[in-house]
Length: 183
Image (cartoon, rainbow, N blue to C red):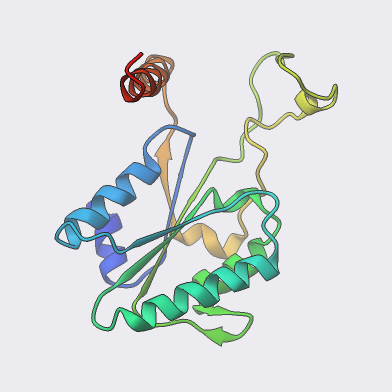
């Protein structure tokens, strides 16, 4: 965590790689809260396969305006699941050049990303749920794009979650759901 904080403060991009549920987003939310005296200066962009370059540029335009209005404060921009879309070349430009389609971004924007590992399945493929027959034929654990070589310098591996922790994570989600609804 100290290395992540040092890089964020120094305005060096950070990309956290780890399995779903291992705490990447929760860590960034908590670090932002701690380093900004409880004030939320975190903007989360949920990346998905439907994100296009045009949509990403519009998001960046809005974020840049918000950052300009923050004056002496830092705006943390967190791209969650950034390697699930086909706009990795634009995300690479944003992270490395600090521009979006050539337009310079505000200096007070801190760039942070999270991605899932590019890893093949172990063992047999599961067939379940309401899905097309070819949905479960993919050999990858996550449907992701490999990160460009130029972004790999910024990656911190969060590792993978073990089976026991995964069960605890699922249990906590269900428990929270039940408690919120007084079931």
